[in-house]
Image 1: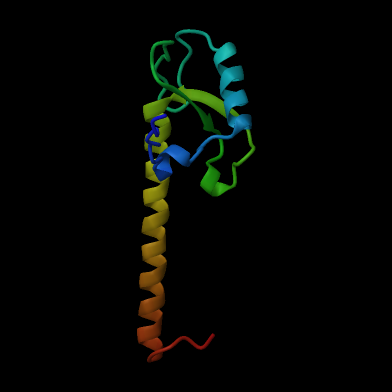
Image 2 (image 1 turned 30 degrees about the vertical axis):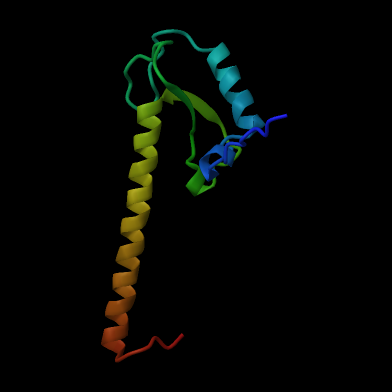
Length: 112
């Protein structure tokens, strides 16, 4: 009997980004999909041969975990997520800069 080599699974293989609820939502949205329906993000028609995502109406980072979802182009969904992430990163950097400026004006550490 030969020993079979087990392929070592990477963290990406083990990770399951979408649970059963997300898969059910996507299946439902695809069943109600009409070819040529406009994308809610860009307004261009969506076709059955394109990559389509079940995107959140309210972003997950803003608390839209189990909220309503809609079918949209994969590229639109991914770019919206990256824009939001960049905006959150920028606002965090602006807050840090404001705190440092306030600390410099107060002469060191904040009083809180």
